[in-house]
Image (tube, rainbow, N blue to C red):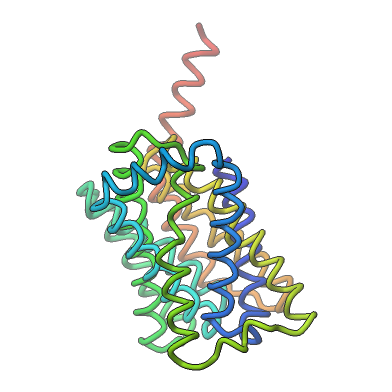
Length: 279
């Protein structure tokens, strides 16, 4: 499931990078949040009352995950529509992994990951503003991972129940922004844009929401963020095909970081498998 999430996320981020400029951020986020809320609440219709009672009972952890989720999308949408998809996706997921390294005191892994992020900035030539927003998006996502896992543990709710309620603040914020700025009319999008929005809703919100929350609750924050460092590697390959641009130096930097983050877990897996085969 994590590998499916990795492949889907890399593909959708490249797609968003190429079509996102034609979709106002508030409009795109409004439709994605609305669709996710409707789809997952429909799936949880028999448990809706219980789910929302849990939301009220554990409102602190729910508020933390909601705020982190909103900040993640705000920083992400700005970065991915203004910076190359390969740069954003690398800095985003490496920043989340860096937070896990700091939290777990993995100093060597943290140093390699931080160096890779700085190398991305140097090799891409992207401005410091986009570096900051990309890193802040990754930090916000890490905070979301931690708070959503805490909310799930405290409330006893499963992945689908959690994602059915996590977009409320994002939906309300987008609706409020559109109303306050007098841009509600932008919700009436042209047919070609509507097709792009539908693809984004499915590939960038609905499916990744289910996969990421399920994987997060199965393997935990640290393992999930470390495994997600594989996403930039795949994104580089896709971006080279779509944009006919091959970033050898950036690919090398992110591969080194990915190897540093995951080598010990891979070795443990291989040793356990070898012991099982021997037995």
